[in-house]
Amino acid sequence: MPEMPEMPDQPADRPALRRAALGTADISFFVVSAAAPLTVMAGVAPVAILLGGIGAPAGYLLAGLTLAVFAVGFTTMSRHVRSGGAFYAYITRGLGKRVGIGAALLALVGYNGMEIGVYGLLGTTTADTAHALGGLDVPWLPVSLAGLVLIWYGGFRSIDFGAKLLGVLLVAETGILVLLAGGVLLKGGAHGLSAGSFAPGAVLVPGTAAVLAFAFAAFTGFESTVIYRREARDPDRTIPRATYIAVAFLGLFYAFIVWTVIQAFGAGEVLAAAAEDPGGLFFAAITTYVGPWAADLMHLFIVTSVIASLLAFHNAINRYALALAEEGVLPAALGRVHPHHRSPYLAGLAQTGLGAVIVLAFALAGADPYQQLLLWVNTPGMIGLMALMLLAAIAVPVYFRRTAHTEGPWRTVVAPVAAAVLLAVAICLVVSKVDLFTMASTTVNTVLVALVPAVFLAGLGLAQRLKTHRPETYARFAAEPDAGTSAPDTQGEEPCPLPTPSSPEPESAPSTPPAPRPAR
Image 1: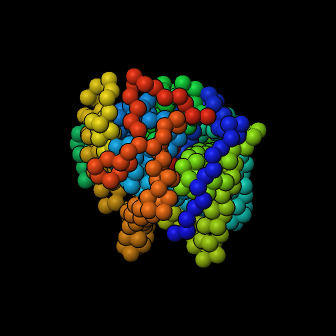
Image 2 (image 1 turned 90 degrees about the horizontal axis):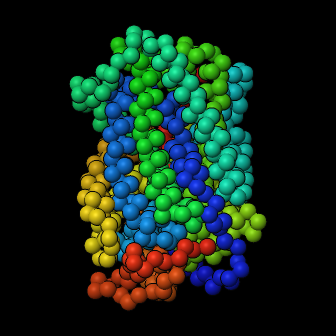
Image 3 (image 1 turned 60 degrees about the vertical axis):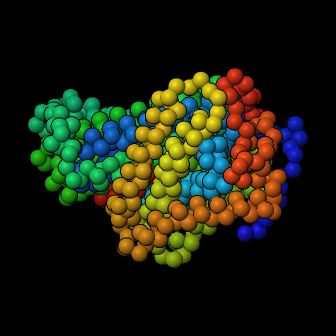
C-alpha cells in the first residue's frame, strides 16, 4: 500500500465545517432518511411477513429494543469522546489504535457499500415507477448516473440545506405510510383489528429468526448521529436525543406499519397475498383502503425515499473521509472544506467518482442493477456496520474501566455488555440468512461475508505500516481536538488521552437494506 502524505498543519483561518448548524430534528432527519422507511416497508416487509407470518411486527420491535440498549453506552461515550471520527474514535479509545484503524477502514468501506449499491436500486425503482405510471421503459444506467450527480450536489451544498431537503422527503415517505395506516384503521381492516401479531404463539416460530435478520438491516444508518457532532448544536444533548428518537421512531413505526398491512388483508389471507406478489402488497393495500391515486404517490415517493437514503449516507461518508484526512490517513486534499458551503466538497467529489466507477463497472459487466449491484454491494456494507456496532459496544466498558467518570454502571457496563451479546447474535442471524439478502450462490455469499473480516484485517495491516513508517500519524490517530500524543502503554499501543467529565475539552471547528422489486 503506498504511503499517504501527512497532512500539514492547518492555518487558523482555514474553512471548517459549519458549527451549531444542526438541531435534534435535523440530525434525526439524516439518520431516519438513511434507513429509507418507505423502501424498507414496501420492499422488504412483505418478505418478512412471508417468512415470519403474522408475528413479523414483533421482530421489528425486538430489533429496536436491542439497538436502544446499544444506544445507551454509545451515546454515553459521545459525551466523553469529541473526535470527529465517531465509530473508529470510540473503538480506538477502548480497544487501541490498531483496532481503531481497522475499524476506520471498515467504516469507510461499509458506508460506501451501503450507499453505492443503492444507485442500482435508484435505477430499478425509477424504471418501475415510470412503467407503472406511464408505461415507459426507462434504462436504469442513465438514472443511476444522474442520481450520482444529484447526490453530489446535495452533499456539496451546506449541511443545513441537506437537512431541510431530507426533512421534506422524509415527511413525504412516512406520510404516505401513515395515510395507508389511517385508511386501514378507519375501515377496521379486512376482518376487524386484532393484536394477534404480538401473541407468543405468533412470535415464537422458526421464521422469526429470518424476520429479525431483516429487521436489524432495516435500522442501518441510525448510528450515524455521532458523525455530525461538530455541526450539532449542544452535541452532548442533541446527539443522544437524536439517536434515541431515531431508534424509537423506526422500531415503533416499522412494527405499526407491518401490523397495519396484516390487518388490511387479514391474518388468514396476508400470507397468500405476500406469496403471490410481495412487491405489490403495499400498493394493493393502499389502493383498496385509500385509492389508486395514493398508490401512484407511493410509487413516486419510493423513488424520493431512495434519493433521501443516498444523500444521508453520502453526507456520512464525506465526514468520515474528512476526519481520516485530518488524521493524515487519507490524502490531505480530502480534508478541505468549501469556504462558502462549509462542506467537505473534495471528499464528496471523490466519493461520487468512486460510485461512478463501480456503477459503470457493473453496467459494463452486464450485471443486474438490483440482484447484483444493489445486493452484492449493499450486503457486506450492512454486515460491516453491524460489526462496527459490536466493536463499539465492546469498547465502551473497556474505556470507562480505564477512565475516571461519574457515569453509572447501567450506562458503562450493563447496557454495553448486553448490547454486545445481542449484536453478536444479530450478526450471526444475518450471516446465517445471508442468502435471503443476496439471492446468490453459496460461493458468492461466502465471498461477500468474508469481505468484512478481510477489510478489517487490511486495516490492521495499515495500522502496522503507519506505526512503522509514519509514527507521528499513528501516535495522533483519533486524538481529541486539543490533545497531543501520549506515552505508550505496556501493550505497545499508544492509547489516546482519555478525557474526564471534570476536565471537558472544547469542541473542534444512518437503510437501505435490500428489497424485493415492486411488481410492474
